[in-house]
Amino acid sequence: MGSVADKITKKIVSSRGSKVVDLASWREGRKMALEAGLGDEGPIPAKFAGLDPCHGIYALAENVASLMAESISGMREAR
Figure 1 (cartoon, rainbow, N blue to C red):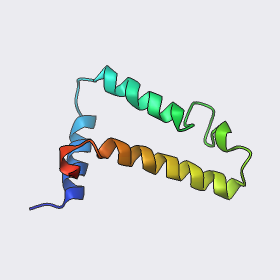
Figure 2: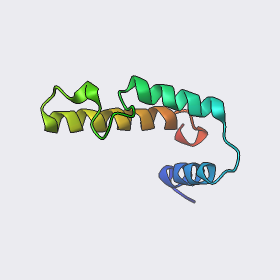
Figure 3: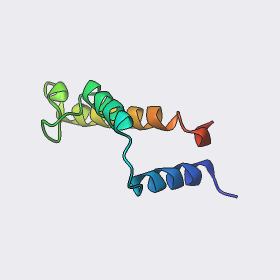
Figure 4: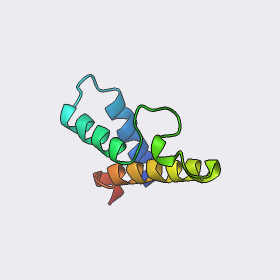
């Protein structure tokens, strides 16, 4: 019997190794990342440029964690 984290990890790893790409999911993920301010502008997005550097990194980490939680919440294993 495995933990929920093990089940979610196994599902993520198995989907990464798939030869088939779901373009609709990719587009949705890209859209979510752009809305969160995670574009192609470098390590610290322009959205966080005016903030104190430490707070900018904190806010970026919060956005990434939020995106991950949002995407994992749709998995059956997370119920």
